Length: 211
View 1: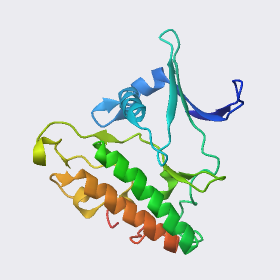
View 2: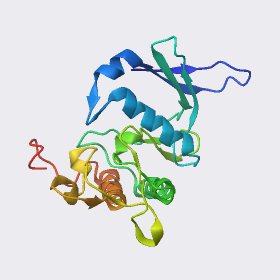
View 3: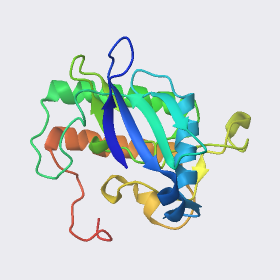
View 4: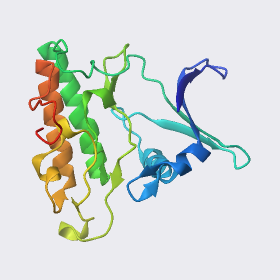
C-alpha cells in the first residue's frame, strides 16, 4: 500500500490517496476473509460516515481492468495526534481534553449508527493542523452491528471476535466468549486518554500475553 497526495482539480485541494493492489490483497488473509474482502467492508462502512470527527472517504476508483484500487480520502494536515511509542511527551491537559472530547463525539456518532471502530489508539487519531480538530481514522477492522437481537429491536451489540491493539483492548476481549462491542471501544478511548495525559499506556509489558 502507498500513501500520496492528489492536487488535481480546479480548487487544488489536497486529498490523501490510498493505493492498493487487488491481486496482493486477495492472497493475504485476515481472519476468515482475504484482505480484499476486508477492504471492501471498510469501504462500505466509510461510505456511510459523514461527521467532522471521522475521516471522510470522498471517492473509490476501482477499474475492473486494473489491479489497482484507489481510495480518495480527506487529507488531515497534522497527521496522528501524538507519537505512538511509550515514553512519548504527554499532551498539555487542555489539548488532551479537546482531543478526548472530539474522540468521544466521533465515537458516539459511530455507535449511534451501529458501527464499532475496534482499533482506537493515538496512531489512528488524526488532527487537523489548522483547526486542531481530531478525527477518527483507519476503519480497517471496523464492524457494522447487524441483526435485531438488541433491546428495542436494535442490532445485537454483543460480539465474539476481538481486534485491534492488545494494550488498548478491554479485559473481556482477551477471554473466550461474547463481549459488548461498544463498551470495548469506550475502554480503548479511555486508554487513549491515559496515553494523552501520561505519554504511555497504563498496562505495559514486553510480553503480549502479560499485557
